[in-house]
Length: 262
Ligand SMILES: [Fe+2]
Image (cartoon, rainbow, N blue to C red; front, side, top):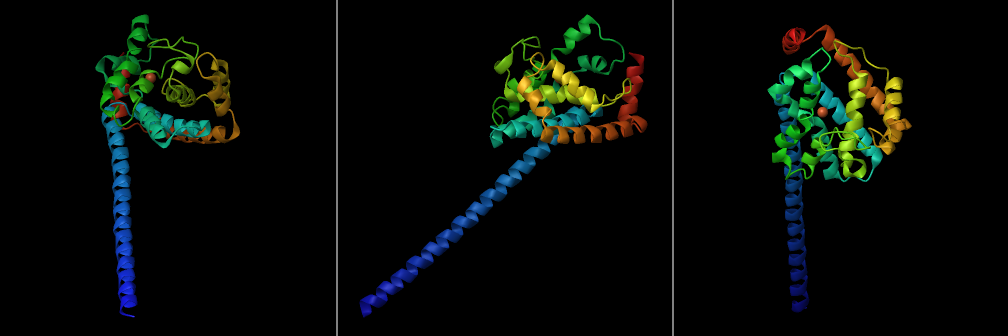
């Protein structure tokens, strides 16, 4: 009888120990998840801050980069096969792909209203490399991000820059950004041009399939679910850009002033 009671006490004690160990484990897990969520939020905010800082004198590029990141996320989702860290790297790369243009020597080229000279066209081709250099500190956290941003102007047929690589030599993320980048540039208005209708932009992408762009990605853009979301992003972008064209902020007015003189 006494032995039975001791065993019962032991069982109760063991049960209590397991319960408290489980509670401690759960608390630790919740804390780890909270810290992980906080770290991810902080990372997003720091990337946003970096984009704001790097584009403080170029709000048009900032808005373009944010739309490219949205378009890219939609297309990457439709592609499938990308892990969560790869999708995170792709989004950061899309947001910061043109940061090389922060270099002063590109400012007048980027904002020029005139047709670019041969020298200017050659000069601007250095910006992908410079983007990669700027993003070097992020390489450890986002493996491959430098190669992605340095390849966003490479073409499927090898006719792009800066290295002239083609096909699957170009990282998938860079191929995705390339399509989104051109689609946004075509469909958004600028001071010197109106927005191209989405249908016409799709025809242009179609013409570039197999030459400038990965044909599989263009086919995905033309598929229903991606097209619906891309159209929505483009139309919202057109409303925003039109609003900024009609009511430029002080930075945009200052850029206009400089651009009018070059
Ligand atoms: Fe670029």
